[in-house]
Amino acid sequence: MKAKSILDAKGPAVKIAFYGLIVTMSIILPGCCKQSAAFEQSQLKLQAMDAPKAHQLSCMAPQIVQNQRELHGENAAIGNNARLVAADMAVVSDAQMKMQQTLQTNGQNLTNTLPIVEQHQRNLCVEIRDVQSSTHAVGGL
Image (tube, rainbow, N blue to C red; front, side, top):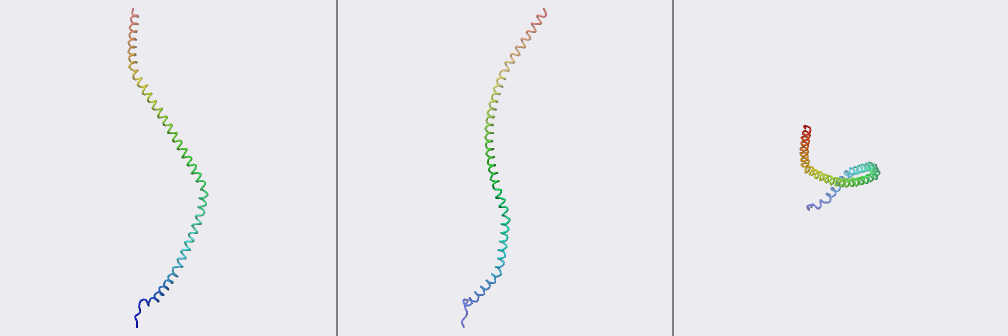
C-alpha cells in the first residue's frame, strides 16, 4: 500500500475549509448588512438634520456678505480717521513746540528785564525820599 501524501489529503481539506468559509460568511454577512443598513439610516437622519441648517446658512449668507462689506468700510473709515488724528497731532505738537519756544524767549526777556526794573525801583525810591526831604524842608521854612 502506498502511503498517502499530504497532497492527496488536499482535496477534502480544501472542501472543508471552503464549507467553513461559506458557513462563516453566512453568519457574518447578515450582521454586516444590518450594520450597513443602520449606517444608511444614520446617514439619512444626519442629512435630514443638515438640510434645515444648510438652508438657514444659505439664507444668512447675503447678510454675512453685507456685514463683511460694512465691516471693511468701517475699517477703512477708522484707518482714515487714524491718519487724520495723526496729522492733527503733528500740527498740535508743532504748535506746542512753538509755544514753548515763545514762553522760553519771553521768560528769558523777563529775566533779563527784572534787574532793570529793580534798578528803576531803587532809583524811584531814592527820588521819592528826595521829594519827601524837599517837601519837609520846604514845609519847615
